[in-house]
Image 1 (cartoon, rainbow, N blue to C red):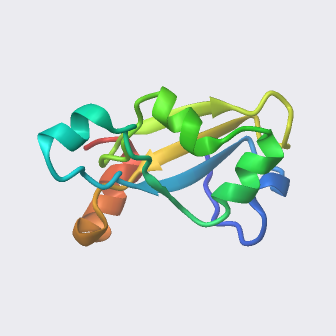
Image 2: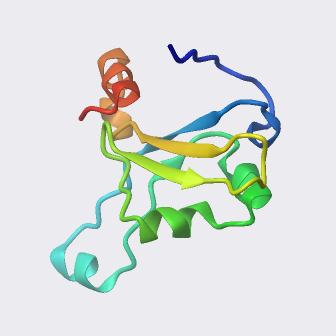
Length: 114
C-alpha cells in the first residue's frame, strides 16, 4: 500500500517515488474574444514549483499548458522527471478555484476525483 508524507523543504531534493504538487485552477478569461485570442492561462502552482521546474530543466507553466491542464478539482498531470531529481514522477494535482477550497475539495483532489 502506498504511503504519503508531507515534506518540508525543497521538493527537488526529496528522496521519494513521486512528488505531488497542488495547483489552483487557472483564472478564467473575462470574455469570449479574450478566450479565443489568448494563450490559455496556467494554473497557480503550489510552493516550490519554480525551483522544481528549474531542477527538472523545464518551464512547468508551459508544460501544463501543453498538456491542457487547468487545475480543476481532481485533474492530474503526470510529468516524468527523467532522472533530473530523485523522484521519478511529478503529479500536479488540481485543487479547483481558490475561493472554493475546503477540506472536501482537498479530499476529492487527493483522490483524483472532481
